[in-house]
Length: 176
Image 1 (cartoon, helix red, strand yellow):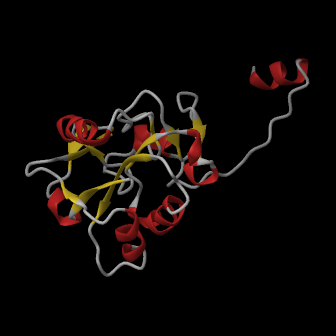
Image 2 (image 1 turned 180 degrees about the vertical axis):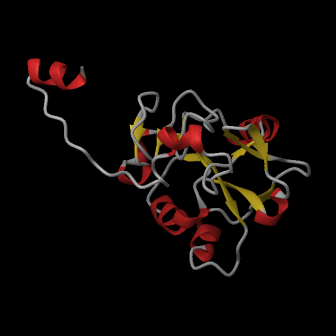
C-alpha cells in the first residue's frame, strides 16, 4: 500500500487542501461545465498572434489542457509545467511571452508588465472602465482586435466545449 511504501522509505505524507478553482487537474474528470478561467484561443488565432509577435517562449498562464506552447506555467502543481504560479516568477527570464490570464488577476498582471522589458502578446479584454486599463495603454497604446470568428474553447468531461459568444469579452491583443 502507499502507507507501507512511505513508512519503508521514511516519507511523510501531509494532507493539504487545494481549493476547487486551483484543483483543475484533479477535478477535470468530474467537471461537465466549463471553468470560467480556463478558456483557450483557437489555434488559428494563436498562429496569427505568433506571426505578429512570436515565436513565444512560454505560455505564462496555462494548464496542460489549454496551453498553446510546449513550455507553460501552471497556476497549480503539474508535472508537465515548467513552473507554478506565474505571478511569483521573474518574467525577465524570458524574452517573448504569451499571456492570456484570467480577468480576475488582470490588475496584477498589468502591474507586473510595467517592470517587464521583453516582448510578447497579452490577450486581454478592452475594458476602459477597469482600474488597470490606463497602465496597460501606457505599456501598449495600440491594442489589436482579434480576428472576427475567433473562438474560445476548453476541455470538459463532455469533450471540447466552445464558448457560445466569445465576442462578449471584447478580447484584444496587446503587443508588449
